Image (cartoon, rainbow, N blue to C red; front, side, top):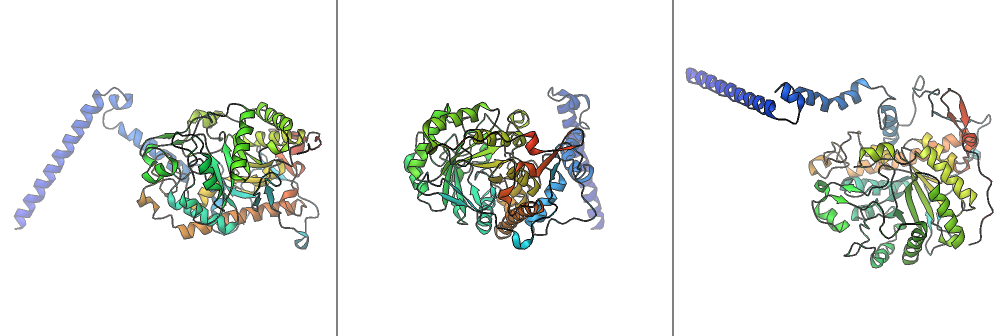
Length: 498
């Protein structure tokens, strides 16, 4: 019996050796005769090691070789900051900061010699969108809010966690251009319904804007406002991209598109080609829904804002959008062409102050509320945005980190290891909705708390008192300059009558 087993083991070993040799010979012949890859043609078989290590390289760099402040798009220190806030572990460090105060672009807040005492602090007041200009204005309570992420781009448990967490924290959640799903409504949070260029969720059978569908959505109490998306920072000039592998039957039904086919929306609203038509569209949606209507756009220069303000002044204050969401060119997306993500649209650092200036010069600043977005995932960056003139801050990737995102850079492949951007049920196991919802709320609440903490350090009673003189920006020579010197406030024009 033992002799028989020995012979069997030898036979299996020989067969495996023959199979391995045959496979290597096959790979050798295939590699040496193909014409697509130079390395494999010159170095058959062993050339595959080059591609193997290339794929592993980004993960080795992330965990072993890059410093805490080096990685892009978000470095380890920033991600760690968000993780601590989401876990409610506090933003406390020991021995000193690794943040360099001498690097160009570094933020420095002007601390007051006599900061505000606890008993003199005030709660940051809410702001009202559409007050006096629509039937159902929206009282927005939180400075920090969830930016547009479509169901489809992110998974069902991710949307559920964000909805429940937003309700706990009292912030709003933007649907993104993919339409309103039942999971957005699950937590009964405040929802801003985004109207994208493809009209997902608000389209008729011809793909045009459906007034009947708008009325249905407006009847939902938690849908507080509507946002017309012109463009986003990650891909200005191109519509949304949802790979066909992520277009499930449910997502196709919500959007009104075919199953399993790439969902690519137009690069602009076909019926909106100038500011006059844009204002017409704002008025139409506001009249149909009775709720505030704003726009979302990336900024490439000053012409658009100047033309928009001039058109509003000709028509009257009631023609203005109730809010404008400015997305910086550094904004993120689940899928975007690299040429656009890298090189198109101004950074939020430059775009936001210029938009604020245009509204001040036109006497529209009090009429139009401003939302800023673009890598504003920390309280310091959010406080900068308030100093520059924003009323609110939106972040998508900050809340993705709070869900457990590890920046694997696989959002477009349906293989996100944390399940945040994947529709593979096996990858949803670690995304426990009850746990992640609390982390979403923790991140939002702690961000608002830290923004207030910076304000109190600057001698302000609450965060809405930030002005440009409270923030300094380090220049290439290592010296800092006040934001109001980089972007002086323009002379305000008197407010026009409604």
